[in-house]
Length: 127
Image: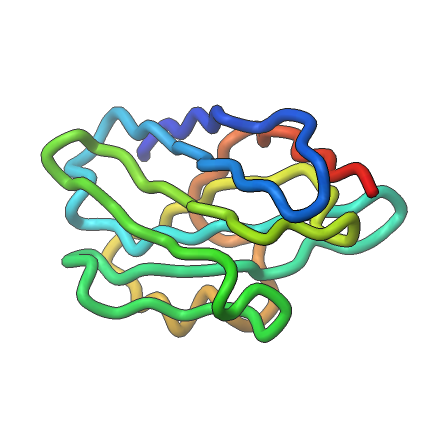
């Protein structure tokens, strides 16, 4: 098992940027495909972005493509989500997830509950 802790959320105006971080501890971080998901109030959890174990392959939801960038630093056991041109509809709790020896493609379709999850960090985008 890997333990995940998200950080970097906060309040930002529309058009602004935030960078989320997810620090992992436990098993070898480089053995996990990593993903970011979000859940807005009253809505289901949605896929946002995923990255392969090596970091060479990335996948994005259409709603964030071109605005968000997922990356990872295996030496620091951390995955990041750079969020630019934020919109009010990006407001949600953002969760980090890890799946051992899995593919990032598998994280793009439901069910999303597999693997290890952090407790989330709140991102609020004001108009």
